[in-house]
Amino acid sequence: MKIALLQYPIEWANPQVNVGLLDERLRAISGRADIAVVPEMFHTGFCTDRPGLADEWLTGATSQALQQMADTYNLAIVGSMMVTDKGKLYNRGFMFRPSDTPQYYDKHHLYASGGEAEFFTPGNERKIFEFRGVKIRLAVCYDLRFPVWLRQDKHNMYDILIVVACWPTVRIQYWDVLLPARTAENHCYTVAVNMVGTDGLQMDYVGHSVAYDTWLNDLAGFEDHESGTRIVDFSIEKLRHFREVLPQWKEADEYQLENTGTDA
Image (cartoon, rainbow, N blue to C red; front, side):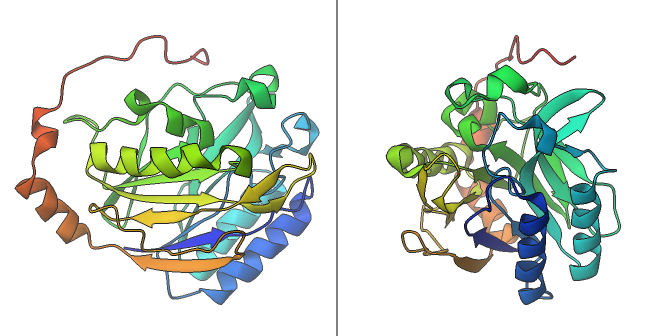
């Protein structure tokens, strides 16, 4: 499974420009990757108080452009964006797949300090995406801080954890610690993509996008503030062999999540 990590600046509150920039980046890797991963709220930046910029799910211009790009470049596109769906506003994680119905996950842990909880509706489903025989769990930024929400168990197995984020430099030390922790405890591969640059609120983003294997080697190797693309080839066969040799997942504690959301 070849996954492209696209770490780059986001044009603040400018969906049309951001969609065009993504198209250019995907054209450059056409035929070289199965999945392309972009940062959180890729088409606007983390401007949570601008609901007028939200895309109407599936029928909006950004949704339609993402599907067209997935079809044209024959890859899945994973990220998140601000959408409206049935009258509610979501920070929606997505996987647009070539010639197939998009899959989505609505961010569960909304970042109240960043204004999300005031405008957005939290999701309440722990979803597993499937693409080309690989099972994928998607997390959006603040979700990373909540290990129980992402915990893999005998009933909720996935091969790759993908995290998309707008995680600022001032708190990047937590990102750097939490990502390998989630990888180790879930016996999975992890791909995490953050933006770089300065947003419209003058927050700085250093990046630190990574691709961890099960031994916690970073296979992406981004430099600080680097704008660019890395393509990492993960062996799912090696992952499954690793899990058989070290089968901690078979001994996972049983648990049940309660009060997981409000959008029934």
